[in-house]
Each structure stands twice: as C-alpha cells, then as structure tokens.
Amino acid sequence: MKKAIMNMVVILLVIAGGVGCSQSSKQKEESVTKEVTETKEQTQVKEESGSESEDDEDVLTVVDVMPQFPGGDVELLKYIAKNVEYPQESQSKGEQGRVICSFVVASDGSLRSFKVVRGVTPLLDKEAIRVLKTMPRWTPGTNGGKPVAVKYTVPITFKLQ
Picture 1 (cartoon, helix red, strand yellow):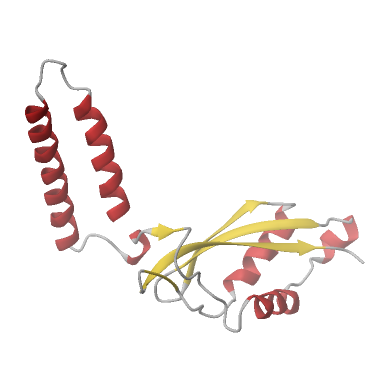
Picture 2: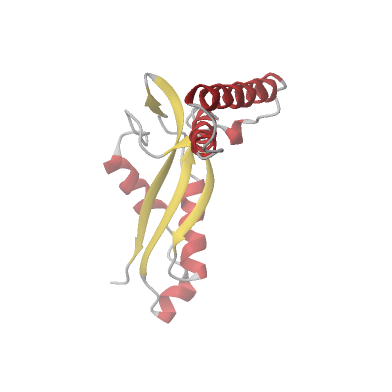
C-alpha cells in the first residue's frame, strides 16, 4: 500500500509539474500538497474500513532478509527432489527441462500465489506447482526488522537419466 502511495505521489508531482506554465512555484507546490493530502486521506479511509485482506499486502522482491525454507536452500532442494513425481507420460515422451515458478511467502510464512514463470510442458508445470504447494511454512522475509510478504522464484529441473 505504501508503495502505491509513493507511486501516486510521484505521478502527482509529475502531473502537477506540467500544469500551466503560468502558475508560480508557490501555487504548484500548494496544488501538489493538496493532492497528496487528499490521496493520503483516501488511503487512510480505505485502511480503516478494513477492506484490505492479507492477499492485498505489499509484495516485495528485494528485502533486508529474504524468506527461508526450514533448514535453508540445501533443504529446499532436498525437499523438491524427494517430493517431485516425474509424470510417467512425460517420461515416455522424453519431456524434460527447467520449470521456473514463483510464489509469495506471506508475512506469516504461509505460501500463496503460485505461478509458472517459464514452463516446459503442461504436465511438468503442473507437477512443479503441486510440489511447491505441499511445502511447509517458511521463515518470512523481513524488511526494517518487520516480517513482510516477498515474491520468491524457484527453478525445478526435470531431467531424464
């Protein structure tokens, strides 16, 4: 939400900067201040009304401390390797490759918003998402010492031997 406010402030500053060349700097500044104040008031009303859900929390991509699978990256790779069930149909067709998936580690460590960023085949893509959905809660990422929602990307490689 704060990110959206900052984007609106920047947009408003750009728009206000281009409003009438005849306006003085003081008038422009007052106009921008008024618009920013109105935007903040609208945002506060929305927050107070409780209309935002957990799914609407700001999702960051870069944070002070990234989220972590229980036991770290090595355990994550072990978990994926142990739980992937290579689809028989894909094996018989010789389908292999790397499925890149993303998901959100929420501020409480739960996982949501699973997506295939780059897929291989529908069967392999579906299996990759299935495995990710079975993962336990993660340690959430933090920014400024507070837990935050973070988008995380994981490649899952399917290779025939």
